[in-house]
Image (cartoon, rainbow, N blue to C red; front, side):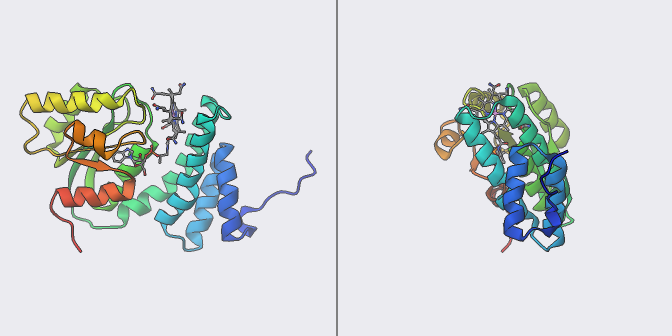
Length: 229
Ligand code: B1M
């Protein structure tokens, strides 16, 4: 048995708890992340603030250490799963934060070859929070899957996410295909993901680039012309 005194998350101050949650996310401790998220919610923290200051910031550190070869895929995966523990609690709050009526429909997916979904899920949540009906096609989404969903849901916006420099070009492949089918006139395309930037979005003729989930939701409202004050 360890001599370490048991850490009671609920007894920590807000700052201590946020720091502890960053450590716990780094170590892939899902139940602790869910517990910390719930404690901050109980203390009146806004869901967006929890997301930004504890979960997203912790994942940024995981990403840096992954890049530096300090962490490897299994550790990153368990950190990502731990993050989902917190996101599951925040999802309904973010989604319920705006209007009951649909602002518009968005079909969104992570492009073919790419299995990163945390950022895309956040974007989906924020869009739901902004009143959009979101049809999430998940990861590794092919042109055919996008086409089928567009046909089925008649979206106001198509959203694509890519986290790898090797999968970003697939966004262009999809846009070119839609263009050939003359489908772009009434279907603005929004793209995002860590390696994507405005220059790339412009180069592939996407209509909008979202740097983060909150900005993307605001952009989406502008795109469908309902950017209320
Ligand atoms: Co991956 N991975 N990964 N990975 N992974 C990155 C992306 C990488 C940058 C890490 C690194 O080296 N520093 C690197 C890519 C390098 C490159 O291409 N230049 C990388 C690599 C190399 C790989 C593998 C190839 C590793 C391997 O197998 N050797 C492999 C690829 C698998 C594949 O997809 N085919 C791989 C696998 C994985 C895991 C499975 C272990 C896991 C994913 C788990 C999951 O998503 N369920 C994972 C993770 C977690 C990461 C990092 C660490 C974190 C990504 C993340 O979730 N960030 C990442 C490093 C990093 O980005 N710092 C990395 C948090 C999230 C909130 O941010 O996704 O950027 P982000 O989303 C933001 C914005 O970008 C924006 O809003 C979001 C919220 O604010 N946004 C949009 C995203 N989509 C948008 C769409 C929009 C608008 C805005 O409009 C529609």
